[in-house]
Length: 322
Image: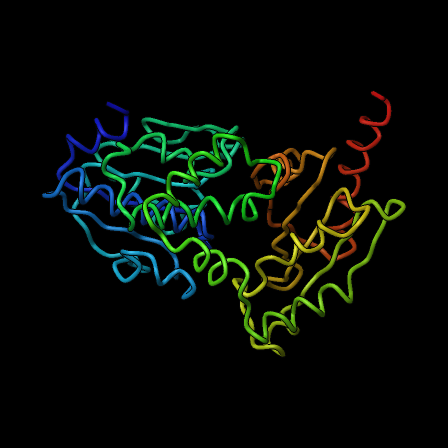
């Protein structure tokens, strides 16, 4: 029996939480947990609290059950936090973690300090959905649960392309496909499909990108006025940083969008050398070796200048080691 199964078996009520601005891995893990808990412990009172989940994930069972506003609740027996690297990233839903009788964090972020009473953190895993799969009874994984887990895995691995993909990741993906899920539709509709406005803002971001460090690094920025002009929000900017990363010759890509005057949400990706999690952690963020983010203040020049100093240091260290 896994730690998760043990804790679920004792609980009478369960609250499931994920990070702010939930992505595919977060949504997939939370809804997989919701569906699995209902099978594992049929009498369990369960709730999922997340910020607004993108419509593209509406095919997942339990999508309509997600609550997006803090409500008055009796303390839950068990709080399970998924794909959230620190408790501050739970946003306002952190109150449920603090009041719960017991708590469990399941995650794969290397920067996670282990903030719950029990913690299952596997930085070597491709995604939180991969970590969660290892905690489940395979015999209880139906198509609904499989679709959730598969969604999380493909989103955090770039459809099994990123360096975080391992042979175990592929094996798990194969087992989930064997349940009969429509994996092609999941990939097309939730990962690749973009609206016309999303394609427009992507095109503008790429057109205005700037390379530096002899073309090894690249950055671009989307201002609030641009988002207003195109009628897009933060969730419409998904994928821009990954598109920058795939440009030939790029080692490190930086994408940022303005959240307030002189405040920017920064996403970083690297290919071979730079550990962007170290940089993000320095500025109060977190993530993975090849994918991380943080929030920074100042002008665009200030942000890029501060980040580039850390990038350059790592690149020089790598050169010195060769």
